[in-house]
Image (cartoon, rainbow, N blue to C red; front, top):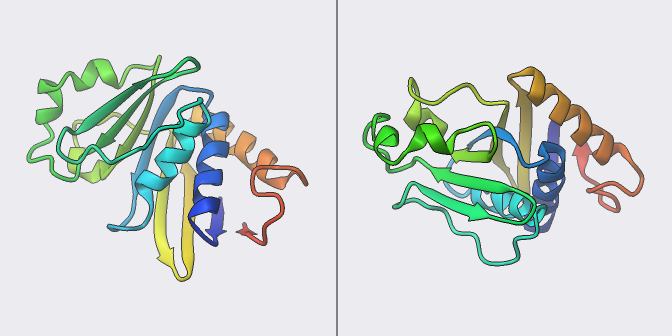
Length: 167
């Protein structure tokens, strides 16, 4: 699925739709250059579960846990990860459990250690906005994309009232 997003509000709206489609479980890898909006998309995902506070990228702590009424979300940022084995020392295996939703920025830094994602989201700058390319990596990921596509296609869906380019 490819989406062009006009601005930050549309990116957050997509995150909220994605959060609902994920139903609080799975692994999502976010890829894109600095400033592409990985943390912005994560803010939308967290809003889908009721989080209203600020969302900052856990660049120095590697992971920020969110215990919400509707879901447990672990937001990883592996940008400063020196070695994938460091994930073992922070309890990565437990955090990546199936009962939680794990959103992982800079997944290439954990290559060889991270499990396969359900969904891969590649964000790129497409001035004045962004482009999101979503691909399923598992059967669960395909189900998520089907739910997301159905939401986006509805006249009152998550990106309703916009001129977003969806393909």
